[in-house]
Image 1 (spheres, rainbow, N blue to C red):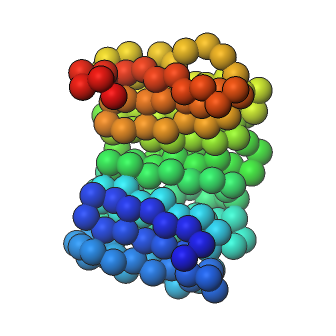
Image 2 (image 1 turned 120 degrees about the horizontal axis):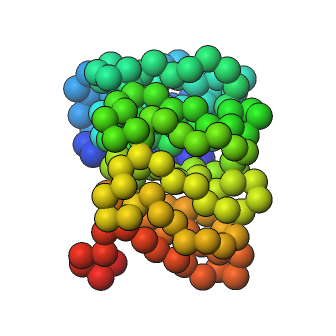
Length: 178
């Protein structure tokens, strides 16, 4: 595989020839990917999304809450989680779709270089290195520290960012000393 991603009970990967291979639960077709060649993959709890080699998105799995209704256009990156996904458009702006109970499918405006999704919130590194978060405000999950960052990662309600000096800063639910 050239890329791999796992959801709650299924996983998908991009094979060396660019096609997709998925395994695990096939409930709602989440282990039955579309044909074609792809450059990026992200699996969530109820489905997956991938970027075709022409930059367009394909999503499959549960159609509930619009999870498979990827917006038209060309994309550079994609991330999926519980019942929603987000992607970085070719113009570096964000697009999100799927469930929006906590406003997790309502991203901020701006130009972004990378993104990550937690259970009900997302965070993205802006092209200037700042981090913006949106969605559920539980445990301060949408209140990242100020600074210049290169990457973010997320779990349920706990998020971290890596700064330009390779120092991690984390925020959100720290009940277990993560």
